[in-house]
Amino acid sequence: MVRLYEATGENVHLAVLDGPTPETTTAVYVGRLTGRQSIPTLSRMGGRGPLHTTGVGKALLATRDEPWLEWYFRAPLERETVHSITTEAALRADIARTRALGYATTREEMTLGNVAVAVALPPIDGLPPTHSRSSCTSSGPRSAAWHRW
Image 1 (cartoon, rainbow, N blue to C red):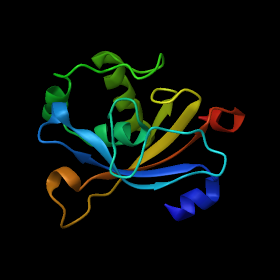
Image 2: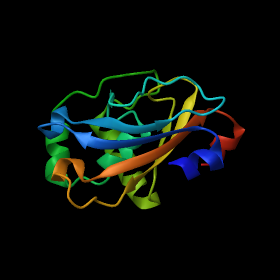
Image 3: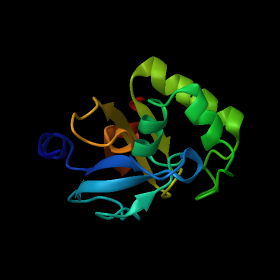
Image 4: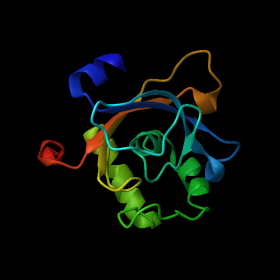
């Protein structure tokens, strides 16, 4: 996390999946470094974020199998901003894109003016299955530098 922060100077988050069932699962932030000139975000250590509107959440969704996703889509996809993905079809397309590219992106879907790039990290031995997958993201202001992807 520190190396990513040093390279970007932007917010860096580490999150794990947490929830008793797929449709109630969220991303729990277990690490956070705040960028020097970052846009304030709603994330905090120990806080929860939705999977469909956060970079860490989308990266984690891309690690889930089809039966898990079917359960996940039983719950509504709440709109956080005007840019949030709120349909199953659109989120499935985004998950497919994430899997193909190897990283997830968000563009003002959770916080206006903020974009993010996130990757799922390999499973961590010794943790319960629901917590064994984590993801890391770097996020920052919507600017020319971030629009390259």
